[in-house]
Image (tube, rainbow, N blue to C red; front, side, top):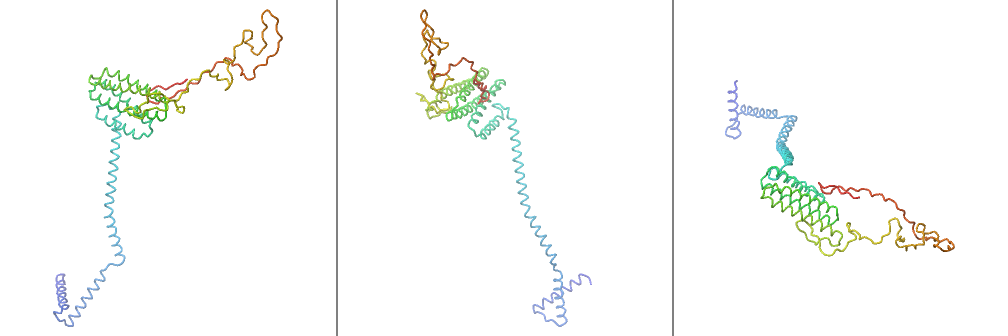
Length: 362
C-alpha cells in the first residue's frame, strides 16, 4: 500500500475514533478492537520515540552551552570596547608626547608655543618643594629672555614680543614671590644675593635686545627692565631686614612680601644675624679672661724689653744695685710668637639659581 492510501486510511480511522469518543457513533466489536489496537500502537510509538537519559543530558548540555555563548557575546563586546578605549588613550598620550617634544623649540607666536607653556605648567604641578618651584619659575623666565633674543634675529612680529614679555613677567613675579617668602621664613642671604645678580643679568640682556626689537615693543622691554630693577631693590631691602625681629610689614605685592621700615631690633636667633664687632678683643691664642699685652703697662726705659722677667739694667754712671731675682707673673700667658697664619680653605657654594656663577668664600 502506498503512502497516500495509508494516510487516507489512518485519517479515516482517526475520524471514526473521534466520533466514537464523542458518542456520535456506536462502535461494533471489530471496529472497537481495531481502534484500541490503534491507540495502543500510538502509545507505544510515543514511548518508543522518547529520548533516553543520555540523550536528554546531551540536549541539556547543548542548550546550556548555547545560552553561555549568548551571554558571553556582551562580555566580549565590553572587553573589546575597553581595549579600544585603552588603545585610544595610549595613542593620545603618544601623540601628546611627540607634540610636546616638537614644541621644545617653539617661540612666542608659534602654533606649538601654547603646548610648550602647558608642558611647563604640568612640570610645575609635579614639583612640590617651594624652592624648586621658585627656581623653575625663574628658569622659565630666563627661557623667555632667550626666546626674545631669537625673535630679534628672526624679525618676528610685534605680537610675538608682547606674548614673550608678558610670560616673562608672569614667571618672574611668581618666582620672586615664592623665593622671598621662603627667605622670610627660613633666612638665606645667599639666595637674595644670587637673585639680585640674576635680575641684573636679565636686565642687561633685555637692554641689548630692546635696540633691535620693533619700536612698538620697546615700551614693553622698558617695563620689564623696571620690574627687574624693583626685584633688585626688593632683595636689597629684604636682606637688610633678615637680622631684625620685624622683617616684613605683613602685606604683599606683585613681588611678594614687603620689607618693613623703621628701626631694626636685632634678633640674635636669626640665622642671618651678625654680631657687632667687639672692641679690644683678646687674640685668638689667649685663653678667655687672660690679660692681653695691651693691658700690661709699658716698661720704663731702664727695663730690658727683650727679657721682661730678667734683672734690671744698671743705670748709667752709677753703682749697680744688688741683683735680686724677680719672680715672673704666674697669670700671664706666654708671649705669642709671630707666625704665619695659614689661609682658610676655599669654600665653594653651588649656584642656587641656574645660570649664575658659584659663590666662593675664603
